[in-house]
Length: 424
Ligand code: GLC
Image (cartoon, rainbow, N blue to C red):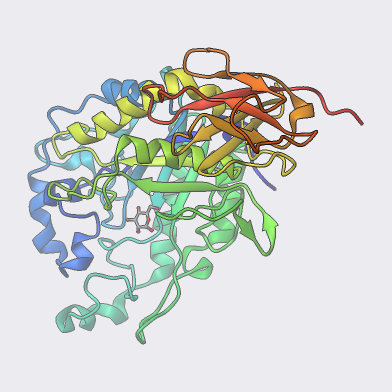
């Protein structure tokens, strides 16, 4: 039943892109909901959408520089606006008066030609479609006038639309590696939720797998599939569902909202983003970081700054990310550190979230063959006997890494430890 996630758990790092009409509002992709904006009042964004600086080659280059190996683009977000030339609606980029073209095809081509795997985020919600019924997330849920039309709506017709559009996405863009559906939700405040029966999840999954047998499907159709997607939070350990470890992907924004937000000041630093990536891989997961391009079609300078910064780090440290996972429990982790481990090369990566003072003790001295800083391959000396200070004794199994006083000038320094094969 399941798709091929072997490349996914190797590659570890992806780019999310949220791009739609909300980029013009520039104050959150949920603005229709937050401000109870009607379809008619939202039309101004459709009429004025003019992404004249859109350059998907530049977007793909930015992803490559950051070390990202896959991307997931919003083909349609909750607002209902479509980036591709779908035959099922005119609410699409090719029909906007000022843009007038398919934005998805050139994007897919640009990323794919650089070896980046292709993913589509597709919103199950649709606040524009006339048959999409009211629920607790709907922007018009408190609008008495709007509610009068409710009885004429037909979710079965909406399901057909959803199915038809996903079919287009699965058949018109070559190999699609990920489909990221969003989302199912419980009822609240006396208003309805929506889930697998509303979306026709089972039928959707079947169709998607039929056209794209290797595809990875996420967990938000209310029928769990290949990956689980905790959002804007880090689990304390390897993500578990029903007590079992699962394949998981953590998704984070740079500044809070997913769509372009002009005024948000809560941007994560490059250091924090780098630590998020490390922390995720140290718990066996993937990280997908989101960019919300502007309505003119550019990556915001703050996003580029973070992407380039992470790329600088990745240039010298991607060995501790690609092909890596959680380290076996037998390796004690020093304070303020994260391990990742590459089972193929049998190397252990010690990431310092704060720079230690000179001495780092490891309890598995019998397993350590060699150690070096990863950024410049400079040796880290390994002491088997305490040759410094008084009252320090190493146990038989312990060794001490002699860390230089000066922190290397990289966001997060890493010591690469070559392990001896385990003796059985
Ligand atoms: C949420 C939001 C949304 C965003 C998504 C990404 O469910 O609805 O705006 O696209 O998370 O995970």
